[in-house]
Image (cartoon, rainbow, N blue to C red; front, side, top):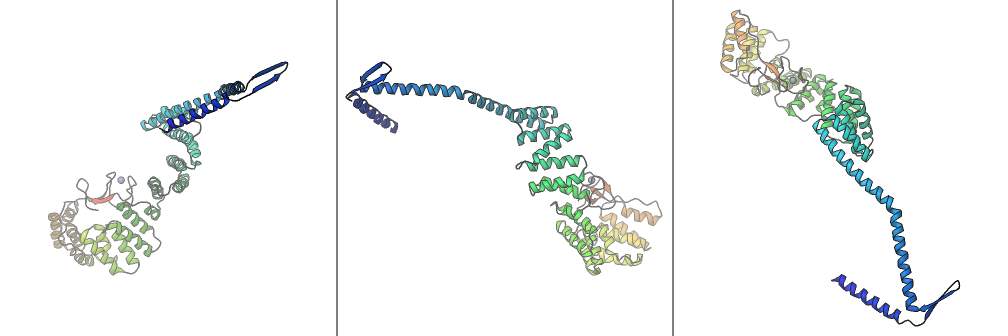
Length: 403
Ligand SMILES: [Zn+2]
């Protein structure tokens, strides 16, 4: 509607202009060399208009010829960019498919078409890593690490390369840089945890995990490394918060409390844990170190009374009675243990000792929930696979106990 109105207005103005020009009086005379051209004013104006139009057309055509190479270059650039993008996409797919040769070829093609962009560098780095070209990967990741937006990927690649080469000093540096480039990344935390565990820096490792069994195990390990009993006690409290009544943590807390000259608090902690999680480690932490076998047998009664009838309580009473030479007591409690709980060999071992038979070896152990390795001694890290907090108390071949 508005366009139609504009057109009508323009037509009216042009018509009025033509009318005015047509009505202009007089002549225009041009002197050129020996010629004299005389024409009416409207015809002269029309000629002038035609000459201006001709010039405009010539300039347009000439400009088009001048700009033609620029247009061709832009067209080539667009074609290159499209080819580069396709190469990048194919490279990413080849990486995901684990095809190192194709990834490398596409990375080279992407670089040819797009030049040195962060994405082509990343593609080259990952392709080199996949092909096992450590030096090539490191060089590309180093380039990437200097890029403002991509530096985390650069440091991540360098950290992985250092770990693959077992260059732990470099790995620590790159882990620090990766953390600075992208603070709080779960991936970096996992790698820093691995490094701290490798260095046996359990207090540091403790700050790098939130998984409760890992926290409990690492806190107990940190307590063992603590320089003062007070610091050790603080770590055992962290363990207790993560996994309540975790026997290694309660035993470590009892040890710290004794070192702080608080034997009553130590025994109170052990007694409380025995109610929920009776365990040989707690029994070991219950007795005063200088107690005689008879004193232990008498003292065991108080601990067992916190969880009466439990197989662990009966085994404690049976084994302490055996050590003290109280054979009737030992037999009674060993039989009660067999009746109460799983036959893990310990109660049978007491009966074997009483009968003077070869003693059945106990089958209880700390079992790794990750690699199934069985070990007699608790440790923060599985002795076989090195993972933290994976050991659970149980009997191999049967269902695992709670801890
Ligand atoms: Zn393991």
